[in-house]
Amino acid sequence: MIPINAPQIGEEEVEAVVRVLKSGILTNALGAGPIVKQFEEEFARFVKAKHAIAVNSGTAALHMAVVSAGIKRGDEVVLPSFTFVAATEAVVMAEAKPVFVDIDPETYNIAPEAVKKILTKKTKAVIAVDLYGSPADLKPIREIADQHGLKIIEDAAQAHGATYNGKPVGAYADVTCWSFYASKNMTTGEGGMVTTNDDEVAETLRLIRSHGEKEKYKSVLLGHNYRMPEMEAAMGVIQLKKLPKFLAKRKENAERLTAKLHGEKSLQLPREPKGCRNSWYLYTIRVKDADRKRRDTIVKKLRNEGIGAEVYYPWPIHLMPYYRKFGKWRLPETEKASEQVLSLPVHPGVTAEQIDFIGEAVSRLVRRS
Image (cartoon, rainbow, N blue to C red):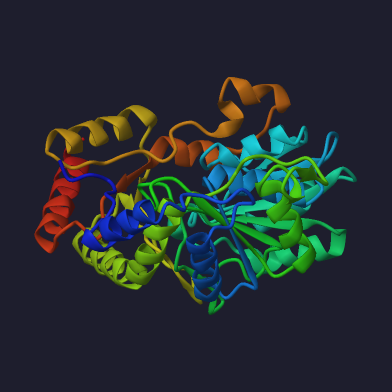
């Protein structure tokens, strides 16, 4: 089976983790051991942010971002339903209300015009997701946010190395959240990062990360245990160095697959918006005019041929049982995409020969199904 994603781990990561184990310094009570600090500094430079705060998951990063933005009970946060559930979880954990908006059918990211239409006096923030590694269109959302006094949180969990308007993703957000889960473009196994250019927000994030403690055993606000262990940070330092090569290979594979599928008129292929660079976390195609049953049949047949095709995401959040209680939403583009998209492997471990095989199999099965 060609997996949809696979961590690219070498001896360098193994040796780095062993060095931490031998040092005896496995974590730090306030969340910033020496390797964590090194990882934070190097990641901040990579994404051109003033501050980077390492945490133990991308979900922790999102929750910290929501809390640091002052979101509380009764507030509303605008965000897409067509994404992984973590961002919505963070909003609900803060006792705020998620307000779902529709997506751009070409990029699958939050539609700026939809954001403007749904704002109320209770709206306090917008969460934009760089889905599949494609940058969200944040410049117009930044203008809307500035007009209405809103915070922008960017979920860049899938977008390491992506750029928007010539800048690393995150440049238009107040706070940006990253994930280093095992499937991501770079990994620490689990783990995440929060980046910001705001000194005060950064200080609040660091306090939240470790029980609200400014010094040991003295909490100044409500916090959590979201610390990143030194072993994860050691992996992160190595993975960050390798990231440019990982991204180059993903791009090469994506472009080769696009060339193979270019003539299939029944498919909508992914593209890079003008002025942007995709991280190619996932290569997502849409089977035009398909229903859920036909799409799922194609995925099943691809898997039977050894291709790890997956659907991200088959059920929009607003239709999930738990989240229906927050309201009924008319999101036609979101629901249509959830029935038609499927993702194909383009990670660095996929060879050119495998890309050709994937392209040929997709073309054949789409025509027959």
